[in-house]
Image 1 (cartoon, protein in one colour):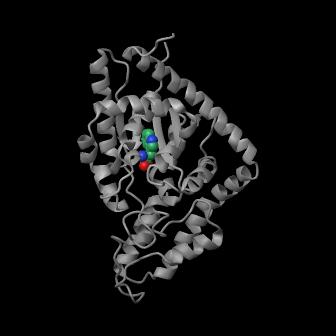
Image 2 (spheres, protein in one colour; image 1 turned 45 degrees about the vertical axis):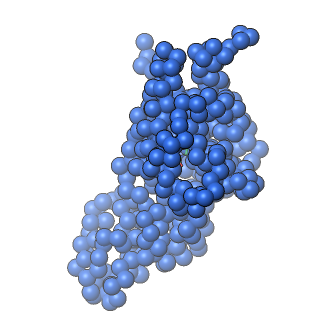
Image 3 (cartoon, protein in one colour; image 1 turned 60 degrees about the vertical axis):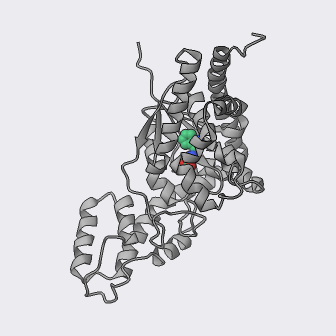
Length: 336
Ligand code: TRP
C-alpha cells in the first residue's frame, strides 16, 4: 500500500504582492516541498479582511497578484493545490462550529494576537473577526486535514491553539474526527528590511517586490543599510546587522564566496559600493527569470483565474468532506 503523503498547508494574506522576504522565508521551500508532499496553498483573503475592514477592494485585487507570485517562483498548480479561502464556505462554517470550543480570554492570551492587537492599535476597538482569526486558521488547517504547517516562530501559538481545538472537538464528540498538526519550523533566518529593521514588509516600505524592475532592484540595493561606522574603504567593517550580508547569506549559494567577502570586509579594504555591486548582480540574475515568468502569466489573467477556480474546487471537495464528518459527529446531519 502506498504511504499516504503528508498534507502540508501554508497560506498568505492577499494584501499585496509578495516580496523577497517571502521568497527567502517560505516560497523557496514550498517550491521544493511540492514534489514530496500534498501541498495546499491558501490565498487567505478572508483572514486578510479581519484587519482590513473597508479595504476589501485591495484584498480582493491582490488574490491574483499573490497567485502570480506563486507561479512566478515556480509553484506548479499540477503539484500544489492553490485555494482561494473566501470561495470555500465550508471553512467559514467550520470556524463557526469551532468558535464554541474556545473562550474569549483564551484568544486574548494568544501571544501572536496580543502582539498584533498592539501593532494595529486594536486595544480599544478590535473587530470581533480579528480576535477569532486563530479559530478560522484552525478551521483552514483541520478542514484540509493538514498534518504539517510550515511556520515562522511568530505563528507557533496558532498551531498550539489549533491542536487545542482539535483535542477539545474530538473529546466532545468522542471520536478522532479532526487531525492534529505539527509545525514545521523554518530554519532560515528572517530576511531583514532594506533599512535594517528586523522584518521586511511592504507596509514598512523596506521591501523588494518579487516583481521589482531591474532599476528598482538597483535602487533598493544602493539604499541598503550597511555598517554606519564603516566610513572609509580601508577601515574594518561589521558584518553583523549589515543588511547586505544578510542578503548574501540568503541568496548567494556559493557560501565560500560569502565567507571570503565577510573576511575581507572585516579586515578592511572592501568598500560598500563594490560589495553592493556584487549583491546587485546576484539579485538581478535571481530575479530576472521570476519577473519574466510573472509577466508571462500576467498576460493571461483568464488562465490564472481558471487555474485558481480549479484548485479551489479541489480544495472545496476536501473541506466539504471534513465538514460533513464534523456535522455528522455533532448530530447536525438532519436530512442526510
Ligand atoms: N496566518 C498566516 C500568516 O499570516 C496565513 C494563514 C492563513 C495560514 N490560514 C493559514 C497559514 C493556514 C497556515 C495555515 O502567514
